[in-house]
Length: 385
Ligand code: NZQ
Ligand code: ZN
Image 1 (cartoon, rainbow, N blue to C red):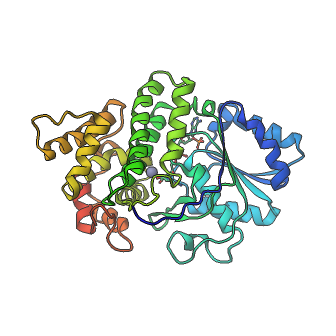
Image 2: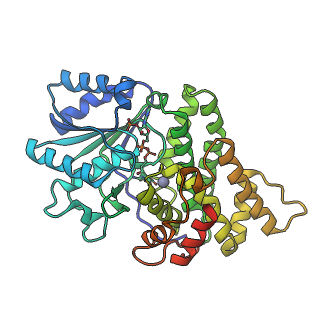
């Protein structure tokens, strides 16, 4: 196991009816609030009114940054920073999925920073100060509710990059807030949280039995609950289990003492930057192809994955055959839940292949399970067309 330091300051407020805890947060953080949300789903399923009524009862002044895009854009973040400065906002409340939370994080660190907030995403500066941020999560997927990552798209330069920004001070997770998530977005969320586990599970770090079993526990729980949620979107326990898995998959737990990979995320972000496709959809296409490209680096890890996660019976098979069957079952699972398997499904051909490959490796080779150069990325993209 590698050395590590773990710190995660986000207060997780989980379960039915937990929205009521918002009131005490107003007392703690102040009454001038920027409310950040997306394209209107929170109005349609009634959460907006509930939040506004709690804030209204406590005498809050609320400015709004509405219309945050899926794959949130730098231009929207810049609007939010302006609003906060003009109205001397005390803290930010993000209500939505990962895109809304990521945009809110960018605004939170952008307000006290003199330069361009994009500097944080292009490694020109590191975020230090931030306005306090609270979140009310409405989609189980990214883990952004309990980590300091934020992924923003600069549509002008066709770049989508992540940065370490700020942890939410608190996040309210009521599984009932995810009942209205459409089927396709539920599927993308499932693909994304599984992919987060893959990025950290496929590692060469020796002697990490607990990290390995926690990762396998998350994968098995996601797989068990995925079909339940798709069959009945209002199955509380299945929604709750997925929501908890999404958070645990990317709140730092799995990375403790482990060398992690993240190449597939860089590749997907490059595809999303050029074609604006849903993140989880891109991952479901690219991940099995990454697996096929790299499994020979550590066949025994892939064999263990096949046996423990997909219950592949190794009898009479070579290690390589078992490993490949695990990868095939991963693909079959994505197919079963209706996730895309080819870039063509998003009308992506080979026209911008070189551009996407270049954008995926802006600072040199990516990934640690196998270091990928631009040619490797191009090959994985070709397999994904
Ligand atoms: O915009 P609204 O109207 O709210 O609709 C959203 C959006 O269209 C809808 N939605 C969300 N909650 C809903 C709902 N519809 C009905 N009922 C609800 N309860 O779902 C659509 C997608 O939302 P979005 O926030 O884009 O999805 P997700 O949570 O998957 O976030 C994706 C973004 O997060 C980034 C991705 O790259 C992408 O930009 N990521 C962030 C990470 C992080 N910060 O740690 C890590 C991830 O790997 C990922 O890269
Ligand atoms: Zn992801």
